[in-house]
Structures are given as C-alpha cells and as structure tokens.
Image (cartoon, rainbow, N blue to C red; front, top):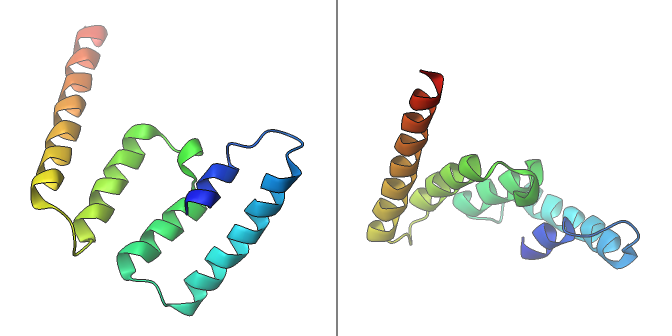
Amino acid sequence: MSLYEATYLRVHGEEILDEALELVKTKLEELKMSHDLKPSLAKQVLQAMSRPMRKALPRLLARECIFLYQEDELHNEILLKFAKLDFNILQQQHQEELSIITK
C-alpha cells in the first residue's frame, strides 16, 4: 500500500515509478480477488485504489480512516476517541467560521 501511494508522487518521465505502479496495481487486484485479506485491510485497499491519498480531500480521508481504524480489532480505544474528538472540534470550528462569513 505504501508503494502504491508513493507512486502517485511521481513526475512525468519517471519510468521506474510508472512500472512500479502497474506492478503494485496488479498485486493489489490479485489480493483483492483472493479474499485473503482481513475485512478492514480489504476496505483500505479498495479505498486506496479508488482514490489515492494524494488525490483525496484531507478531511474526507481523515473521516474514512477513523471508520476503518474503528473496525480494526486491534484499535486503541483512547486514540480512536481522540481522533473523533479532534475531527468533530475542527468540523465545528469550520461551521462557525462559515456561519460568520455568510452573515
């Protein structure tokens, strides 16, 4: 997954990263079809393949990551609560700023 995301940082003419992207796409597709992945990891793969981090909106990506992390059986409950709280506080701040701007 890290190599897949890294390939999207390439610039025109980087043939090695172009080849790496094709290889990683093929391997991820094979993994996806084999059903050997845990459900939470399979969702991460699907999410990454549909929209790489570099092309995603940061706030939406953060929300999706919180939900994926919540489904992982090894998640840390305190860390999860902190991430949700941080997300909600920032969302509330944005709503307040938008309310001020639109008045």
